[in-house]
Length: 311
Ligand SMILES: [Zn+2]
Ligand SMILES: [Zn+2]
Image 1 (tube, rainbow, N blue to C red):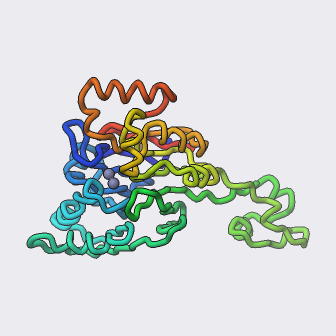
Image 2 (spheres, protein in one colour):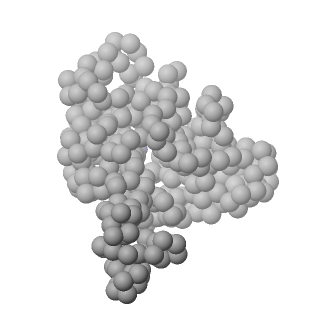
């Protein structure tokens, strides 16, 4: 069983379509929810899942185009109606503070909980949120306006080689805890045992990256490779025949997303942020055939579908 689950609340680009809501992706980790982008109608999409928006700990906004932020006032105001008291964190590029401020005062409303906003201005990858066993990294992307992708990375602690510890005479009890925390201890034989002697290297933690809207970026792919990221959610607004259009609008084609995926060494690729033009069956067939040309295992995201993330 994986501790990390992805649910797509919306998978469309720019204009919502009959099949695709504006973008919004939930990462569920050990019961807590983290929302990546918040397009229009995201609060209502929650109703079709078993997820509760009350469990959202933080929202990560990739950039300030309408299809990624128009759902914010609705989510915030509904959370207040639902009796939320717990603080909500929102991250995003420069300008997100003003958007949140507007969301909090949009029409007549009373918001009874704190909304803490952090504007990201760094032009390099940076850890923006951290708990004991995971962190979120923001990675600057290229979309013609300030924009970021977000990476969830689980932090695994080194495991104790208990047999080795016993062999070296580490006393069972508090000393085991101490050495696990990285401190040397005195053995029953009177000598010092160092953590390196009894700790096994940690396993790779779960890792999922969401590109947001962007041109395909080689440096992003290489960064994910270093992180040993297993799952890549990449935008592929257009099929390969629309390459020029993708370049002009700082978006990715299927081929562009695939290149990033290959270079990153990730195991799974999920394509999202799909243009409304592909709602028509004949266009979707074209899109699907284009995807299969690269790899039959690539997933084309669909609204309300969930996926477990494996290391
Ligand atoms: Zn978009
Ligand atoms: Zn955009």
